[in-house]
Length: 169
Image 1: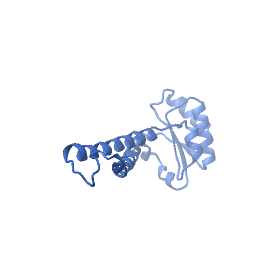
Image 2 (image 1 turned 180 degrees about the horizontal axis):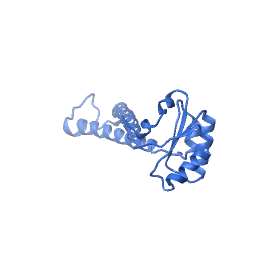
Image 3 (image 1 turned 90 degrees about the horizontal axis):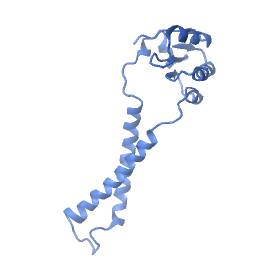
Image 4 (image 1 turned 30 degrees about the vertical axis):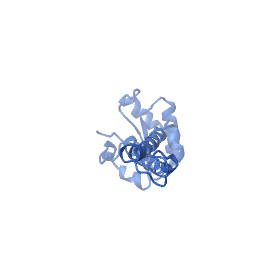
């Protein structure tokens, strides 16, 4: 893990790290940096697909629930309308669509971000607490296919950080 003084240096180092072929990299900053996600190669997420699937399941489930209750299980003739009166099913179908899509968004985001995560090895790094105040960190995981301890450490020192740390897991 390398420590940097400003976001510009962090983004430049992240770009160079990605260009060198490292893929298991992560940046830590006290505030969001839009260019950082692009620099480390994070371009797409599966969250929109999860929200779409949640919405479709919610809409279909809400509609089928109403159909089952109104036309099959407990049919009541209200105002001379047919038992399967689809216009009256639209409000609840919409609400269950929104509810299930929102729940899929929340739980999908938590699952994709591995949250809650009360412990992570980077918390053991010296001065990592400064990542919430005024320092910027770039980490290369040992699981990266190109990771060789000495070569990676020399590469990180070549990025001209303030300091390079070993993070014990």
